[in-house]
Length: 143
Image (cartoon, helix red, strand yellow):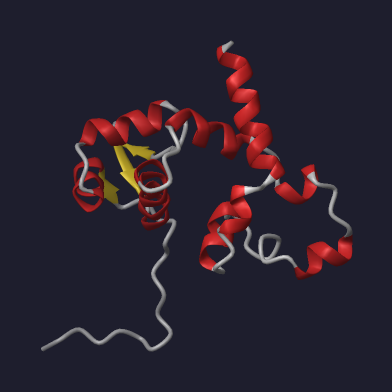
């Protein structure tokens, strides 16, 4: 007899239930790569009995990191710098009226480039002042 789910059932996407091997399989990478993302501060799995446990949202975020690296040619350090930046509307000092209409401010927990991609506005990231500033700061660090 098949299991019937409640019509409004929604699993907790933040509940840490996946071990590193399963996450690596889903992302088509080796577990060492997932550990590198953790060591570089891109993801923080929860720990239980000394084992890393990842949530569904962690896997989605790691998948996005893979896209940024493989499809958009960012490196790990660029991504790390971007996620440490304050929210774009704070940096740009956007007026309240602009923030009220901005899809980024209505998407808590998501980075501006994720929202831009989902809303078909990824081209805006190419000329983003925040992205350029982060890239320039990274170049200065290596000089």
